[in-house]
Image 1 (spheres, one colour):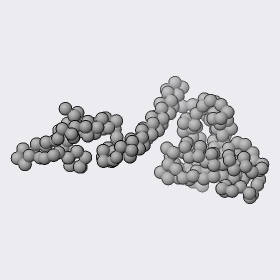
Image 2 (tube, rainbow, N blue to C red; image 1 turned 180 degrees about the vertical axis):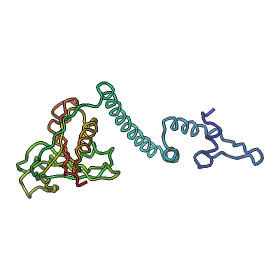
Image 3 (tube, rainbow, N blue to C red; image 1 turned 90 degrees about the horizontal axis):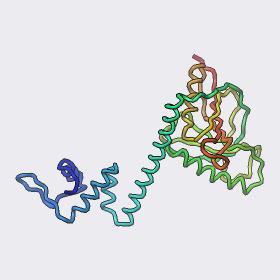
Image 4 (cartoon, one colour; image 1 turned 45 degrees about the vertical axis):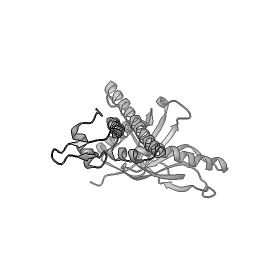
Length: 255
């Protein structure tokens, strides 16, 4: 009647999520009170939405205001997952229609650059949000101080996208002080592999795949940090026309 199987009811009893009013000692039958039907139906509904049992337990035990906060947090996580899945669908569609996109990878020399940066720590799925946050911290400082800086904005990332990693967003400037809240980082000049990506940031993995394939084929070793130069950003063009220069410092393999 409450859309829960006997197996589910037994499991929810064992973990304390939905405890029966009594259990018959002889038959093992579980008996529930009518007022437990609402909780049982809520559990069934939330499980259909793939909410973890731990979250469901917290929501059922919480006061209405706190319960709403818990469910909104799950809604936000679901929306983020849908957004990531949509980006993956678009990449698969692009691959299905035309195969692996052709990226021209060049080996060149990059000059030394001195950047004023803001940093953040994030997980791989948080990169987009953290980059926006960094830009939101960086641009007001640049706007309030009369410093000379050269477009574009730069993003700095580790080679491996670890569970917790440090990223940075900055601009090139000759100034060495007078920038509260900003740090400075010198990117040494030298040999690099680079390519140009035109399109949404969610499809950057396609460009990185081409870059790293070229490095392996030519026996070059990548060096951190990976650099992204945002030549045309979201404020200047639609997603399909964004232009990002990807740069990976390299050195010739000693093997």
